[in-house]
Amino acid sequence: MKQYLISIADLSAEEIENIFQLAARIKKSPEKYRTSLQGQMFGLIFEKPSTRTWISFETGIFSLGGGTVYLGPEDIKLGVREEVRDVARVLDRYLAGIILRTFSHQTITEFRRHFSKVVVNGLSDFEHPCQALADYFTLRERLPKGRKPALAFIGDGNNVLHSLLLLTASLGGEIHYATPRNHEPSEDVLKRASAIAKKTKAVIQGGYNPEEAVEGADAVYTDVWVSMGEEKQREEKLKAFRGMQVNEALMKKAGKGAYVMHCLPAHRGEEITESVLESKNSIVFDQAENRLHVQKAVLLHLSGVKRG
Ligand code: CP
Ligand code: NVA
Figure 1 (cartoon, rainbow, N blue to C red):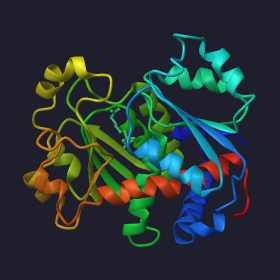
Figure 2 (figure 1 turned 60 degrees about the horizontal axis):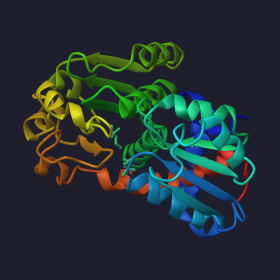
Figure 3 (figure 1 turned 180 degrees about the vertical axis):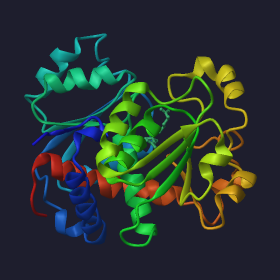
């Protein structure tokens, strides 16, 4: 069994289902898992800021009986102070697992090649698998049992959308996305997602028109227009994403019951309006909470822990 979650494509549909079931059990009775990772130390190497990923992993590991060491942007300086492969081989001697948040996806894949235990992608420029799993878990809690979600994503074709595309493909639901031109998802992700979707009958549909994308959606999802590390492109991106805002007019097109989703942090007035983010259909804080439960399940799954 793989001990890493770097891309959603690292998990089979069956493994995803097992993780969701385990997450539901952990959420219901966290006390049963208090010693599941007893004595195990995890490292968190973060090249970028974080609220949810950092704190949910630290809290989650602590509540499973394990310990953490957080290493921020100024600490290890992967690939600058020392080569990634050297850091990985040293930490392999100390730690039971590592959670990495990096600029480049290749940093995580390279780290994984030289680290023999659990490796989790806590966001790279290319994917955010823990986020997508928590998002689908949240939808599963909300939608009637067995219903495959129809998700609309309005925004940037990068990390969050990539993981949602691959997850939708595996689970067999629908995803309709709208991005500005030149901000489409990667061709490689689209090819991989389409190949999986052929088997699962998932529907993946992309375009440039948010109104078309949200029609009939169970949930409308957006993410920041300027991702971490893109600050220099801010003005250019704000211009490119004009017309992509999730606002009340767009939510009306989606229909009355459609949920509002956002991975957070949110930039009110840019990708989403205050009124939509704070509306009664907004489930953004459930998504944030579920990061905790789902990641605990991911860690137990990757560590091969069978029982609480
Ligand atoms: N959604 C998310 O990953 O949030 P953080 O950047 O705060 O970890
Ligand atoms: N696309 C965003 C996601 C933040 C959770 C970023 O990379 O900054």
